[in-house]
Image (cartoon, rainbow, N blue to C red):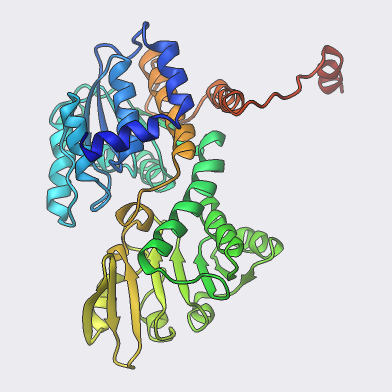
Length: 401
């Protein structure tokens, strides 16, 4: 059996929530007659989600959501299983954007987005993609920021379900998923020890918390940089050092950006870093580590090993950038653990079923509470865990003033 099929079949064994949704809805076909356009990091777990949506009745058209995060063997396996796939592993932005437009040219009824490239492109430069569009589900913090900006500017024309904001998504995917997969990628691509090193985590949202927590578990001393005083205080109370990036630049052995913002680490910081410092980005876009400036100020650039680019600076020090500054856990590894994505993709699947069944005005909406609770209950049941329920007396007590 080809590698892509093997990967897809492997992850399905560890995705009990997607299997439960398939069993519950396979006869009802709640997505029958709908075309779903997906822009997603195309690897085995996301392929399994695409196949579930097909089995629930949808016609599914897929492309990538980031250059370098598509696994070509998985894309080919999906084609062989009857899906329309435009995704291709590439660092060429134009090839990547063509895949986005190819999906939009099919005029999807629903969009499953990861980073909002499909939705933003449809609203700004490829409006053919809006002709039949009824709604969107968005997977990421970055994507929701972009879509809320679109709404603020009066440009959003469809309802968006904020999948990232569901408790069963961001509390687990962003924290445990990003934490484990980021360090998996860094360690497999550098083969270096983390214990005893200084790790600088830029950003202390849920993803940053996960990266910092796993770094501490690996034996590192962790420094957090932040612009939000509440998050900075939280990091301090969680036991991490907190300081400005200008101070941390001199101390770090590993630097991981998880902010969703641009030029978080740039020339000032590069020139202060130790010889051999490792730079990695775990945010959605390749703008957090200022790669363009790094290219401009280096005196020599070479491949140190696969997925590791060396930049020698005028001060004689060499910095190492992982995965071209792109999303390190997907551009240079396999992404989040399977069981974590089972949770996130259960939110996606049930949110798409919900969107197919309701009519909402344009805007960004939370995932309905009953979906969050249903997924949490399903996950606990799959793990053999039972929890208490309130008695009638307890419910009356809580409702009494």
